[in-house]
Amino acid sequence: MARHGKIAALDIGSTKICCFIGDADEAGHVRVTGIGHQASAGIRSGWIVDMDAAEASILSAVHAAEQMASTTIQEVTVNLNGGRPLSKTATGELAIGGGAIRDGDVRRLLLEGRMQADLNDRILIHAIPTGFAIDGSNGIQDPRGMHGQTLSASMHLVTAEASAVQNIATCLTRCHLTVSDLVASPYAAGLASLVEDEKDLGSTVIDMGGGTTSLAVFYDAALIHTDCIRIGGGHVTMDIARGLSTAVSHAERLKTLFGNALPSATDEHEMIDAPQIGEADDDHPNRVPRSFLISIIAPRIEETLELVRDRIAASGIAHLAGQRIVLTGGASQLPGVRELASRILGKQVRLGKPLGIPGLAEATNGPAFATCAGLLSFAVDDRGEARATRPHRNESEQGGVFRRLGGWFRENF
Image (tube, rainbow, N blue to C red; front, top):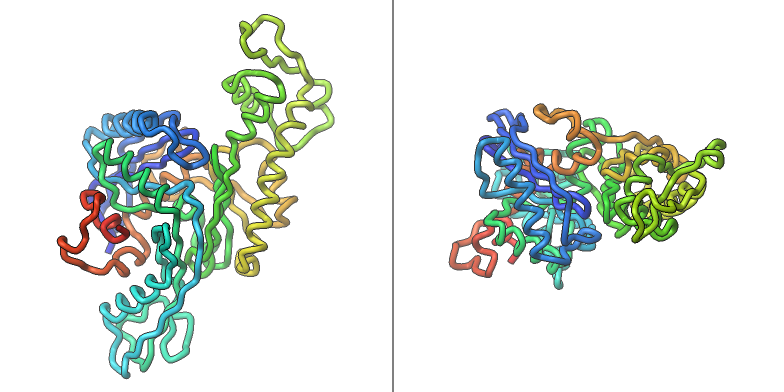
């Protein structure tokens, strides 16, 4: 059953914090009523490195969204950008004895699959059913009500380092927010930007953020693999700042105005000014050809895409990843990235943006906001994973310092 009522999503990124507040109807349709975004502080490569600065950025973004929506939020669905995610496939089997399969049978089977996750200093983020089989017959999406002797299931388990999750939890507690669910960033981006056929036939979402580049592989309508590389658009900006001896703010401006991931014949003849560090903007600027700027940008983008290609090849699921690449994240909007990705990855590439979410303004309906839109989609419908797999325990058994953060954290601590 889809959730309805007031919901909120919080995208904690390395370059920006974004908060969406929406109203969901009983059919699961969401309309965005509040939007707030703020430059990140205290976050590097998906990790919180300064709790006070991160708290201030989150509060600013949430407050702006609350003012626009004329409401106050208390719980949010949050993304996980770093945490070194690990994917694992699990299987389970349950004897039915010829009777009809009930909800409780499915829950017990999925709980058995969850127990196969390696939780040594790690936390289970996702336990996603990828398919069921009855008496060896595969391809069953929902076995409830069907009859058989044995029910088996395959699952995709995603775990992350406990310290990364605990830091997010602590920071949000300081912001007086409760976490309803935690979602891997590329999974959320895929939920927002992929059409159903792309999820079914096999596609890879590459979420190119400011501090990380993460990927999610979808097949047969389910997430089957996720990974994260600690390189993003912010690294390109730092390369420019070092290469041109200019301030980081000027480097970001040069990247935005003149950057490209592919060189062209006219680059050598176009000159650009790069103000030097410590000097006034108009005093003795460093005048360089645009080709020099692109010679700094292109190798870093190539390195990032080659690492993605190698991670997919090493995952063992490259044959299921399909011929479709969908790029999301702010760094994917750099001119030439789409063409370079198609060349390096050898697949069809398109830019992904939030689909089917009314209420988003044009400025917040691009690839940079796909993750936040996907968090709203997950908040409404978790695709059967969270509600189907959470065991019910007494409050006295749950304990731990994160008890007040709600069911998701009580499940993991």
